[in-house]
Amino acid sequence: MDCIREAHILMQNFRRRLMLWLVTAVSLGLLAHAQDAPSLGDAARKARQQKQESKDTKAGPAAKKPHVITDEEVLHSAPGDQPAAAPASASSEGFPRPLPPASFRQKSGEPKFNRKKKA
Image (cartoon, rainbow, N blue to C red; front, side, top):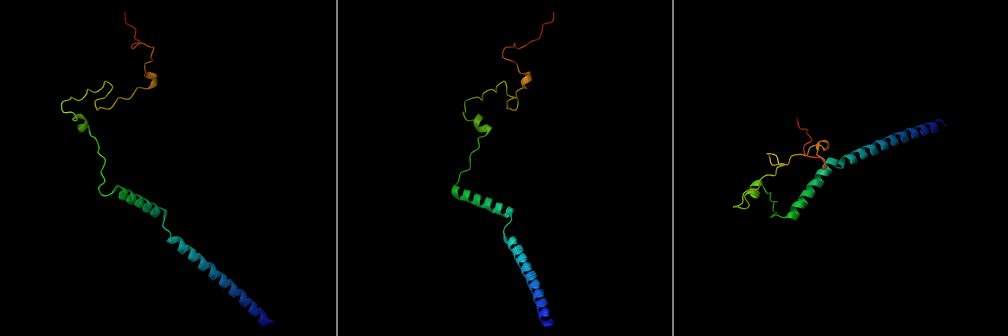
């Protein structure tokens, strides 16, 4: 009987050790597999690079860059013409002045000046 009991105990220990080794091996295998996948940042960089390359190949080697129209070209487009005077609402930099807040705007029915004359 003792021999059978010892064999049973040895088999239980073997099974425990085998399960421990199997769980360890599977866990390490999963960890190693997870590190093989590219990171999200790497995937985004690769996608951006592929998009840029496909755009470059579609445009071809003789792709024209867009032409930017400058102020000098607009002002000197007609040699005999003088540049138009700036509108009254334009500031000294050539940008339109911002509108005043709605509380300060003149209503359509009111006269321009509501000041009373001094006697």
